[in-house]
Length: 447
Image 1: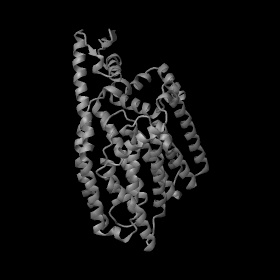
Image 2 (image 1 turned 180 degrees about the vertical axis):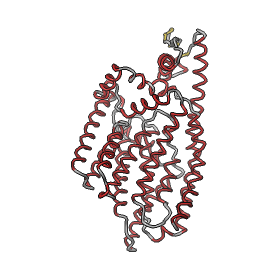
Image 3 (image 1 turned 120 degrees about the vertical axis):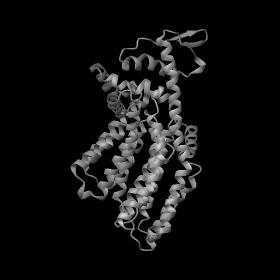
Image 4 (image 1 turned 60 degrees about the horizontal axis):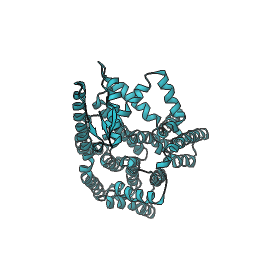
């Protein structure tokens, strides 16, 4: 297929995907802030940095993270920038999240371009990756608080520069080295679970014989991050005991959530077909893209490392698997890169089969994919209605009572955070009403 025709056909294939994303974008820009996480926590970084004393406390919390039980400075900096720039305009916050996912796609496309075979072939590997990553029903971008989106963004940047170092070592500049170090550091500082990938990344860099100074620097960064995350984990040690029951429960849960039941057979068949294709390529004398194979095996090691470590998490949550979704999409896309040298990969039948599988996957999971955005939209809308009603009643100096059985502790504390911290900080004319907690008999009542 000629170059221009290939590009036109690829755009024609992607166009339905863009159209299918429109409902997700609509839901996102119309989704209010979440009571839990957004109103009571995310914006607080802006308040903390509004005073020199607050900045000193924040720095001390990063150096001694056991004080707060978390170590995710990139998340705080992201909140500082977005809340400082966008304020209370929730639509702009959501647009920033969608742009971050688009940036992940762009850097991933740049990574695939490094392994693309010469010629005017249609870019099937990238199309396969986009089909899985864009529509897999695990969408932390549907909310504002999850740090997994920032984590995967910096992971995608790190993997791109690693791939560039591996494929174009003679063109790898000092600035490329600096970007690799910075992106890797930001990745480790995004969320505590990022350390799951530190060992496979460092081992792979050693295997491809990266510059010794850079490797030592990355080792130091990894060691410092591991110490800080270890200090933060000491606060949560009582709730994160690793037992056989915990691991088996997480394994069962992850297999159901990560490998979707209605598309599991397709994903596994594609992965199992790759070794067969490589064997056939060797028998037929077709060249194997050795660098793509090496990178593919590296992604496999990263996937397995993160998956095994995730089995020790004390609380299984869907968004915790988001890095695995990204790595799985990379794996399957790179698998198609490996079989590109085979003669049958350029046939019309193979292309039709690959494209058909991608469309089948997308339409199989699309309802679950879009439902996550819809649920967030409906939930936050209902929360907004309740908060507005309470705010109006409090403005009229009327008492508002909640029976403890109606709401959880987290929900009630977030409610207090909204009325006692968020509104006074962002309301121009000031908000002087306070939501307090009192105990009556055996029930806690909120006034």
